[in-house]
Amino acid sequence: MINLSRLLRDRRSDSDSLRYGIGEDAAASGRDRRPVVVWMSTRTCNLSCRHCYSSSRDREYPDELSTQQAVNFVRDLGAFGSPALLVSGGEPLRRPDLFEILAEAADAGLRCTLSSNGTLIGPSEAKLIRDAGVIYVGLSLDGIGEIHDRFRGMSGAFEATIAGIRNLKDAGQKVGLRLTLTNRTDSQLDGIFDLIVSEGIDRACFYHLVPVGRGKVADDLDPEGRRRAIESLIDKSLWLAGARPESEVLTVGNPADAAFVYRWLEAHDPGRAAVVWPMLEWNGGSAGASGIGLGAVDSEGNVHPDQFWQHYTLGNVKERLFSEIWSDPSEPLLAELRAERDGGRHLPADCQACSYLSICGGGMRVRADRVEGSVWADDPSCFLVESERRGEPAGTALL
Image (cartoon, rainbow, N blue to C red):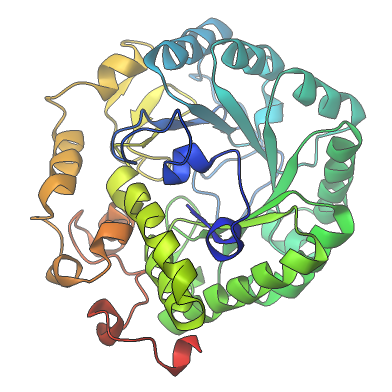
């Protein structure tokens, strides 16, 4: 996760200690902190989104965690020292015990965020979310009006989500937008940033597609499209500094973004680039992410290295505590991911030779696994060209 607003214009964030090691409670590096955990609290969802990584539908899934099992899980996370819990779905508001579990998580010392499609958040739900101690609600948008509705499979979904945003804002809840960058949504960025200003949105996260669930490779941006999208997000982040400076912009799911943003700063503000480099090295990109500083638990209690790695299960919290599963030195994939970050010996040759390995970490291994069929293949989302990997001075593409 790359906070463009922090890197480009030094907008401070409550998450700086988790993301860049800034603050008294920060770990020695991104590899040394306890994992932020994504909990897919239910697969049930009132929408049918075309790129949903969990292939959720409007039906019941009988083997999901019970209330008590979920409470035991979040209490264990708190005792383990996990800094944050992101509650996702499906649609979390389809769980009738959601607010009880959120309150338990807050009591356990977890910073809780909620990921929702927003269509079920009326005034009373907004107040319940606020009162449960949620620090931030991220609502998914794929564009403006009918563009969003087509992605979500429901006419009127856009207006229902906007109503949810307004209800949350009226309740005094911090709220943000989440958009997945695809070849159908990249044209929507202008409208999304106008919406950030008009609705007073606090945060916008732009996710790179991981082709799992209903997400397809055919929907993904090609390398040039990805470059254009990140260049546009850089420009719009700087524009937002004047239009609504309290808002922040982040990209998620592509460690190569760190190198691209750093090179942009080298070309435009070398002094700022020098400040940003150690922040990005502390973060480490994917070297401190999946299986290390990021984990996931699905609705049935299965533990995964991240929310996209659902084809590989590490254990189940119905049978063992998350903390025990995560700390098991005999788990093969976790051991390999963690050992890899100490030497880089399994990474593709291009990654090992790249000038930006220390801030990228070698790409998303789950994307390589799903697209190329090998955990240690090239991440197909890397959009750096060879001269950039060699660290040659930024050319006209960045100017």
